[in-house]
Length: 451
Image (spheres, rainbow, N blue to C red):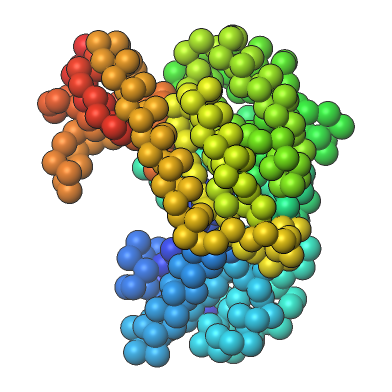
């Protein structure tokens, strides 16, 4: 029995976790819409509720499970008809979830995003696939040929250039959820970016588990510089922002491309995770303190207006007070404009899970607070130095909750960074580039007026 288009149930999708998950969600949703499934933005109003889960940390797993249980409760109450679970959590714990959450109609891993229409059709005639048949070794890789329904505002988007991870960090379970590193071709990515530009996208965020590792599988060497050169030549008046570049894979040739580009904005996310040589070794980061310093100092030298974002972990097993202080000193040395910090999450099936000297949760929290308080001081000082300067921003609209007009500058990646607050209504549509002058600042945001 085949469902007819007019009779297809509506689908809603909730994407949890990182923006890499969001791209997978856009492809899954695009595959369904292409087959005629009506899309319901409010998942609670849909017939089929789909959740794309995150399984990276304890907090992420908890949020995913709570969401699944809430959707199953709505199903029991008759508010939705089916619950579909997919993504990283189910890739990592598929057997356990299948055994414990009987109310879920379909549980997928990270390989089946484009197969959803066929799987839902089978469900419609009461054919439920065996859970293990839906996991497999992760091999999924986005392609411009896959249907995609953009879930971000129309003026910015994400393009995932590679999937899986080439690294083997001791604390991380991502390789088990996403598989080995694999890259899209330069042409596939280029066509994807050009299509986004044609649709009116003004900011393309380049993402992957480690974008700096791009091309190792295709060329036998790091080739992000080649890809970015092609993008820079092909695009016109589009910001290209770089997120998640492991410092071990940032080459001199890549920095040279960034320094001479017209569309690749001087913002680069370089997650260092720690600074102390012993911590980097125990974390199995594949990068020494000296290598990190070389990359960071070279970026500052070659790109004087560079905005550096990083991520750090506190409370990794065995972290001593001296090693924690070294991290604080390192932050003061490099003055990262943007920084995200995380308390170490004790994850099974990782190399660090069985390490001795696990750090107490209260001490982790204390160290996390110290890192964030220091970063607030660094950011506040940097924001103050911007007052009086002229910047370009991408206008986002009026925030009803906070009561102001706002946008983002070169320094502000979507969702994770700060914003530029506008003093008045610019009377332009969201997605418009504006030249502004910074007139005030606080710990997080700056205020501007149109130039």
